[in-house]
Amino acid sequence: MDGVLEADGDGACLLRTGAGSLDHLIIHVVMTGFEFEVVEPEPLDGRMRAIRDRITRALDRAPRPPGGRPGDPSGERPPGRSGDRTRVRRGD
Image 1 (tube, rainbow, N blue to C red):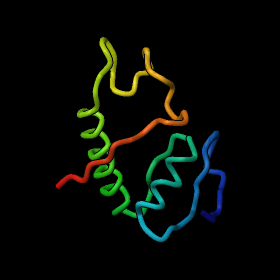
Image 2: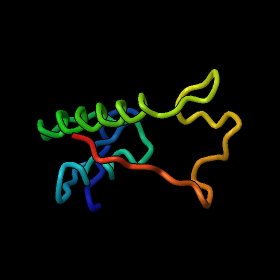
Image 3: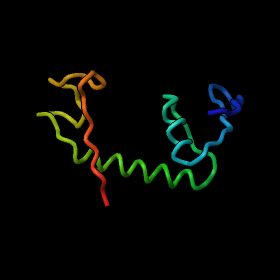
């Protein structure tokens, strides 16, 4: 993803960029690992909320280890190890 990074106050910056779709833009921004605020375009906010809701529903359906949250590594193999599988089911 190409873009221009500009200083925007103390300890902040503004990323001016684009992507082929809002979903691709969201993926790239989220994968930076930094906290961020959506300034524009306006449809990006709604799309991010829709994706957040889909992820929340998936986590709510995930099996919970005893006394833990979904995804807690308590007694489980750390994620990302060879042999791990993610089951994806197409919803309505």
